[in-house]
Length: 241
Picture 1 (cartoon, rainbow, N blue to C red):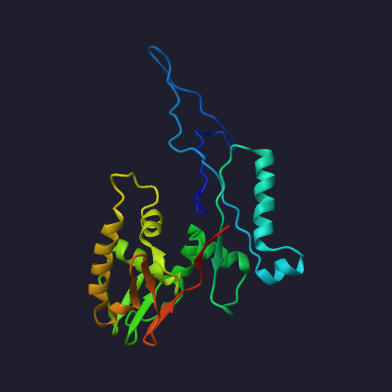
Picture 2 (cartoon, rainbow, N blue to C red; picture 1 turned 180 degrees about the vertical axis):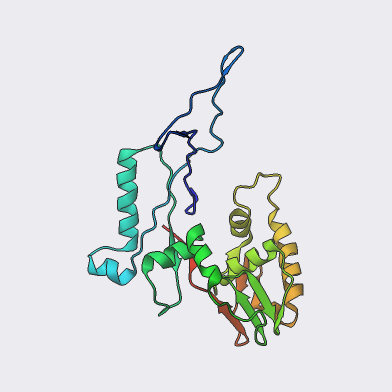
């Protein structure tokens, strides 16, 4: 279930000219063969998103944990609608960034109206400092002050490793996560990941060793002194309940 889903049920209604405040469904216009059929809706609800703003300290003060809250909500939903599918993720923000918890959650999970409000805010200079800057919030990479021409999948690969800094990621996990939802024919083999990593390293140039190979296992992101990460207002956590 997408956490940024927007439920929209179209209504086939029309207001009567003589009573604009009393909108009612317009009758179907007759045809030679009978009443004109009403067009079927083009969209249908598939679920809903509930944004919960609470940090670990507030949860602890209430005598619970974030995981406990998630499981309680899932149990309640399971009792009310056993067929419902659920998905939960934690939204992270840099320490001390301030703001309301629920706003951080909405922005981190790319809720459309929350993202739209940030477009009028001043943004950082496009030109970054020396070294490597991985801008998670804007999905860009700067190398020695210049914006690097990463493909979408190359950035996704780098971001996946960056958000799991110091942990070795197996090739199978990269395939399952970055090509989630793909058919067997569309998803690459584990060895194809090596090709993607080689291309990624080529674009990193002299900083290629920030993506390290763990022989026989997979890959790991190692941060150097000349590497910085910009997380923006909020970044989805790699951890899932």
